[in-house]
Amino acid sequence: MEPVTFRPPLYKQRYQFVKSLVETHKLKKVADVGCAECSLLQVLKFCGCVELLVGLDIDERALREKMHTLSPLPANYLQPDKRSLTVCLYQGSVTEKDPALLGFELITCIELVEHLEEAQLKTFPDTVLGFMAPGMVVISTPNVEFNPLLPGCTSFRHHDHKFEWSREQFQSWATDIAGRYNYTVEFSGVGGVPAGAKEVGFCTQIGVFTRNYRESEESIKRKMEAKRVYKTVFHVVYPSLQEEKYFQRAVINEALYYAHCMKIKLMRNLCSEDVEPESHLPETEQKPNATWSGFSKPYTPPQTEGDTTIEPFIQGDNIYIPLQRLFSIPSVMELCGSVDVLRKMVTGKAELSSDGSAVIFPVDLENDSEFS
Figure 1 (cartoon, rainbow, N blue to C red):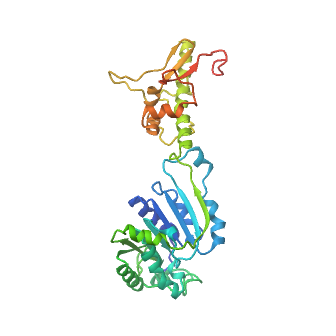
Figure 2 (spheres, rainbow, N blue to C red):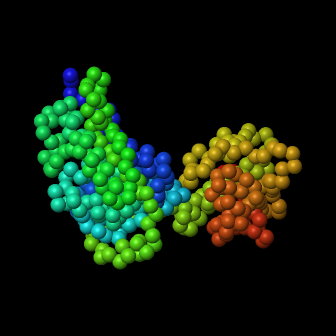
Figure 3 (cartoon, rainbow, N blue to C red):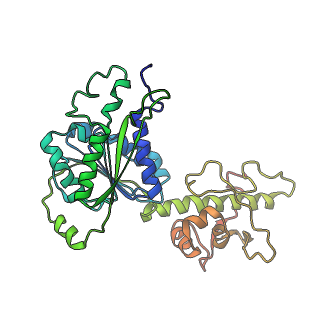
């Protein structure tokens, strides 16, 4: 039969397997051991649940060449996420014990073990399952039984592979180390066999290890005293709404945008009753190009009987936009959680009434560019 090809490519299937696991269990702290060019980390940084993402590899040059792919983009500063995300890259060996990789919910070893020398392979389980002891471990490795179906594969799949296991060999090894370190292991894989081929299993075989115990505080404290041997190559904290400066900016952008829209609507009504409704201010007050759009939804003012929402009004030479009215907008409400928080964020960034209940704009038809 014809050689097998994979769509999507096999490496993407491996990454998707890990991504699905992270999203299903909503894991916050994830490390990729043997991260190489950081490709898996680039996928995982978009998982909304992940708050700490770490990569470890022996090749510092490879880390430095690709670490820019993990840096925040301008859009991350314009539209900060609700979550906090820290990304770190360390140069070091999987056989070394360093406190930097303690306390993780998931550690992945994707296509790693087959690159280890015999002595390193013997040390690997004690480092990962014994010392690091994450809640879950994912280990993937080639299935040598599948090789005859791959184009041009006459021996190992990569020149640096020290070995390649059959399903029986991998499962025997994985079951043994799981038992030694009190884990349960389940087997799966990616890259299925085409119809008509003999049963050889997945092209990439995967073991998912789950820890069967809760590590004691004494054990963790003892491990934390170990000497730090990894070299930090990259460390970045993404902007997020957990930081007050970004949170305040998001609230200001959202709330004052709507306040400005309400001001214009009221002033246009004041100018002429014959003016057609402005096309660029939709009745739903949904902004077309908002700086903050994380929670924006179409908005229709409440129409229920007994509604207590205070509408904007003119008094003297000023237009008053009540904070309670701004807070009734879903995106503002989602951001702030309370009128008090909204008031705190806009104080000093906009003029407020003497009692702090409304944003004030002057009525200045001659100098306002919207009406001049």
